[in-house]
Length: 338
Image (cartoon, rainbow, N blue to C red; front, top):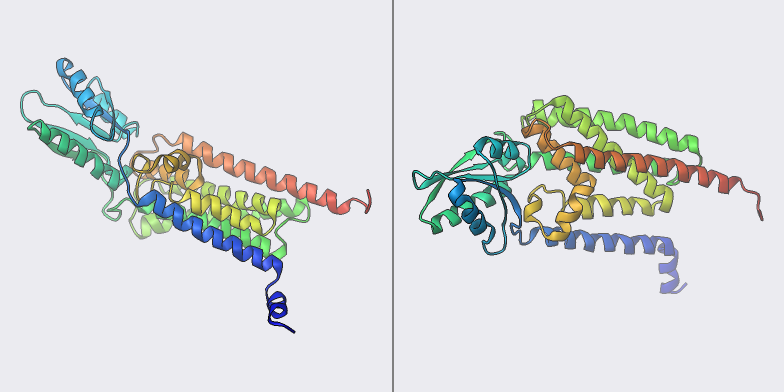
């Protein structure tokens, strides 16, 4: 037997193709994370200005014209209105101008992302310094003591996502990637649902009462966790029904390669490049991270959109899984030559 024959017997064509696929995922993983994180730059950060009517227009124009366009400035009628927008996650910073002195107040919410709050502070401080003014920073939604870099919500959601696609992958490995019939598909979805509830409860227990890393409603976080896990798991089952074992790789591509860098974890959306900022809110990691921070620091404000995104992933994944199982059963039962 020649060396080439030995290689062919040791590595099948199917295995070679899967290895090439893994290589592609590896390269995509490196490119995605490096592309999203290597040079974060603030762009169009929602920013509210509270200033006397006679100067507010000029100040807003000046802030909006800063090099690179880091701020998307809108004027607020008063400080209470601007603070409400900040707590509702409509803006990421508020500048309250004091016409009687040279020190203005900058309101931030570090619970929405420490790196974003720091970027807002740096931009406002530099802009004020150019006008011989200073700022006093007030954090209206500070991060918890155990969540100093506000990454706990991101890590929590990443863990849930990993659990979701691993659970579905194990179900596939145990009895075939494509469910043999509709009943088996429904059983897998039911097992996934039970697992999702357990993962949501346990994950929230660890991140909250045990570690004290995230404040907010335990039940709220647990419910979010169950939805995240089921959405990712059902999507993975759907990909497996469509492409067999390759579907696991497709799930990793969507959730890990595309979803994690664009989730707004280390760098919230206004600090990410345009492509990652655009896709992040529509993928499970991004929707989950935004919702987790809203529950932890903003009393659940601005959470309906991310929950709808996760629900769509969960519903489409479950429906496609069942439909593909039905089609697979019909194809297997069709007489030869029909």
